[in-house]
Image (cartoon, rainbow, N blue to C red):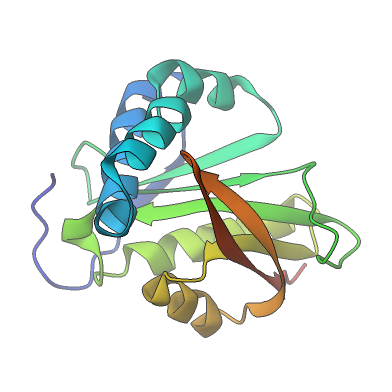
Length: 183
């Protein structure tokens, strides 16, 4: 875990590289467990993390041109303290827009939550998706993740539907949200 002073951080953000697969796998597993571990069984968490955050899985996602990752770093420090992923080509029926793109993940190291890292990642995602010609950013967020729901509402996301997210053997309800991306 990264030690971050409890103040606003202006992170350095860059696109993930193929060589970031190990750091991304470690950060993804750590932040996912920190966010959802207390509310789910160990078995369901282990099954999901093993599949979603294996280094090989991260390498495959980084090589796929439909996936886009941004990494956030505290100044010139390593390893990354946050990341975001958006992907093209997957659209839920409730989502509207001419060229929607899914914000599939936005996670920050627990030590850096509340320091402005998530906001910096969101700004970078909005800029990058607009530059890519997308007009709508959408996401699914677990109905029991109050912190994330509040964060997305502050960023202008509105509820448009729901879908099922499978965590291990547990089907969970995600709220679908979307917002316009300024071009």
